[in-house]
Length: 311
Image (tube, rainbow, N blue to C red; front, side, top):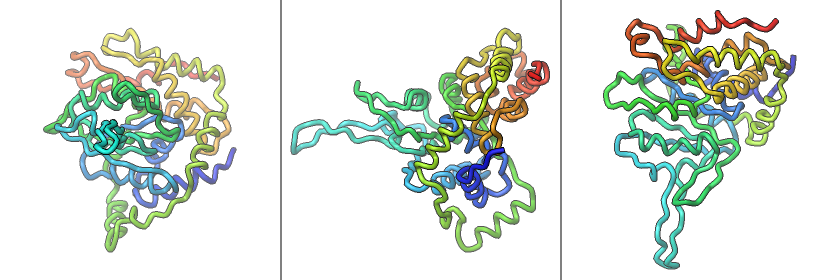
């Protein structure tokens, strides 16, 4: 077993603000430490935005920016724009909110696909090309996007390429009655996120990211990951299967989760714990499968049961 004080402090701080969601919080933090991005889909009021703000506030020295996605939002509102300086008669680039450490893309599916696609390059390559010029993003760049269920009014389904850029998709869900009472008690005078003190700095988080990459991942488990993701291909109920990007995300998130759990190596159980979060949102089911009530998460659960586990 390994002991990571930074990981423990970070998890504890966020859990003190977002009650009753320890497992989801751990997976979201693992996603950040793996270098990925996370999509939180749930009903309004379940704590998606609070979770993002708590993570940002728990890390000292990070820049946190929030973009409220609306139907009239333009790509330049995210990436930035060049404005003519009347004194020098030269165009000066004004960076948009994407140039940050932690970006909260709130209600991302309320913007048009054209605006959503402005995030593609940044999330995939940690860079942004604006007016033909490339701008590098920070090593810690982490997108936490929230969306309401697609059945809600005024929402646009995220394009498949956009969904594939998210390492994970998680749902918070409703907490127990006891936890909800605790939430009410926490907010009698002020919101707990307002009094949250940083428990780690940027350098410690970057060191945590390096440590996660060193968590042992055996060749047998690499074959297991490839078999699990490859099993989504060629199935009649799946119209669009998972790509090698899903395999990479599954490996990296599993390593980060093992770090948070104090393990020196990844186990098949660790992979299985995050497989649905990493794979399901990338799948597009055939229409007849949807009509029969099949869900992508149910498909992933079946694949886990069918795929032989390395001994």
